[in-house]
Amino acid sequence: MAFCPKCGAQSDQGEKFCSSCGASLDAAAPAAAAPASDPSGALPKAPQVDPTQTAATPPGTIPGLAPYSKRIGGYLIDGIILFVAGIFLSFGSGNYGGNLIGLAGGFLYAFILIAVWQGHTVGMKALKVRAVNAADQSSVEWGTSAIRSAIHAVLWITFIGGILDLLWPLWDEKNQTLHDKVAKTIVLDETVNPGAVN
Image (cartoon, rainbow, N blue to C red; front, top):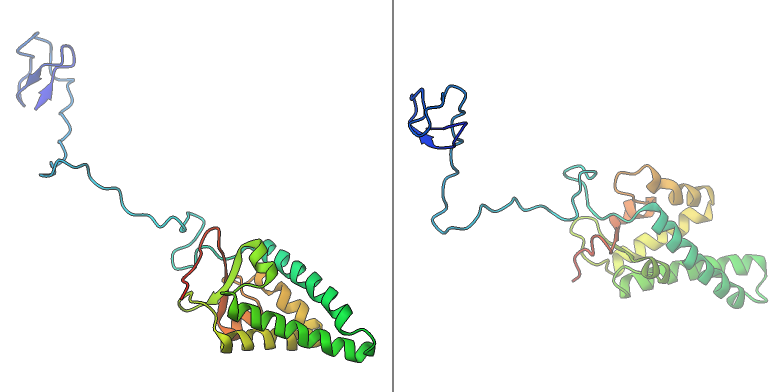
């Protein structure tokens, strides 16, 4: 089926001249095939797209991982809280006692808050990031939180280990620290991916 390029009248396929105005149909392009009609009359549905999966996120990766800047911001807030608390708690206990109290305080702070407060410390809550289990994005329970916090504390005893732990997300595909890797946790940006809560 073709349409006249001059008057637009419909002509049968194979006709050389328009039956309405007599113009040549050689230049007329065949009409595009009409899409199959849906019996319901509804328009075809667009494919479903995961809103957290962007063109920059390769398939198979975890969408909504917390960016490094937010993780560092959370560490800074928590560090200030622990530093101030450590000054009061270690008053009169000397350098060794103060370091021991600071280490124990840091462990208990992260261990208890992350287990009780659905993967948050104060700094993480302020920056809207949370720790979850890497396998299913469920909330971190007591045992996992204890492992995560203990590895973090042990790495900071060596100082070099602590620095490496802090920098590790810069080149890790899941933005994990070393203590995340051992505990099998990831940290999500709650503004993009709130994760599963159980």
